[in-house]
Image 1 (tube, rainbow, N blue to C red):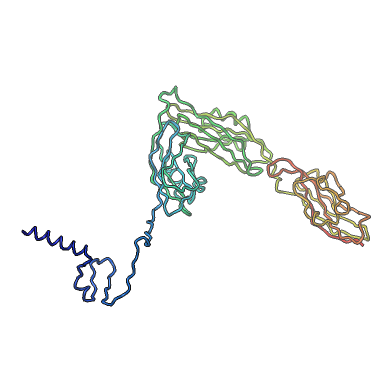
Image 2: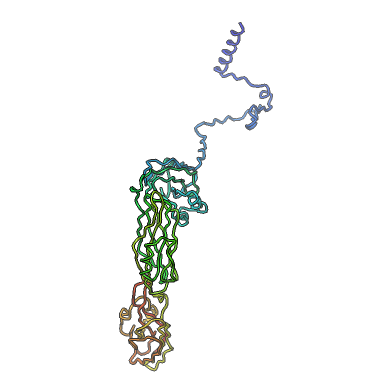
Length: 437
């Protein structure tokens, strides 16, 4: 019986709701407020009639939730002796991403140092050691999803650590590192491939400063110690490549040695800058690497050489143009030239009504490259082989009357240009003006 009463009550409530009737709490009927949700705003109900406003649900725009931008390092795949596919996951949210890249190394400390203070991808490239590899994915990732890249030149049978990093505004963030083990290569001493070395062409940073770069592949060996032998004595450098590093005895400028890298594995590039070398001097050098593993020993590349340049680049002769003396349509031109370290200077006077062109003379050019053009510009040679210092006086006649002229004394000399190749230069004194009657 009780169950039948409950069912009848529920049917009655449903019928009232279907007919438009509502059950109103007494507090609403008397004009007071009541809240059932303490976390929401109170609702005020008035007895006074007010216009009803219908709000359509379609006019309320839902707020798009902010999606955080995130990166994650996934376990590498397709790992072989010297290659692997590095993988990561990128979620592109409300924060824009710059360059996304992988950083990897078999040396955890070197890996940590490479990213600890860097604020951009370029910072990592500049500050990382030779033990750390960097591989860019994209300069700007726009879509979420998995990213991957194939890397090579790894060391066989070696544990590597890798992190996915990305530029977030003015800094970088890196995901947690994961590791992987490359496949073993040589299992017997007879199968071991020894290190190979290749030296790039020297790059001169200055007349007496050179940058040497070598690419070393340790192949199946480990714990590589890469070092440089160099000096002015070809005989001593050639003898040194047949000795272990500890047995090489240095000999001032004739023979020097310096370590470039330790704990090398796989393929690495090392760079060494040699400065304060003697100018216009022949130097000999060779890059070597000692190694351990199933076999131990050392190997050296072939002995090569370079010649430093003259340190005169950047210097010029000292040239002074004296004040000319004009008389009617004649003028007396004068000046002084100090060759300084240069020799065989060709001294000439330049004069003409084109003061703008005359003021621009000089630089890497020759005297014959200065084209003459009537009264606008003329040049007259006053010395063809100046080695030291001399003063010159030249009288020029039959100039245009009532005209303003410009004049300079100049010297042509040979020097090395910015590429350290011999070239002709022209250096001129200050511009002096005079007017004919």
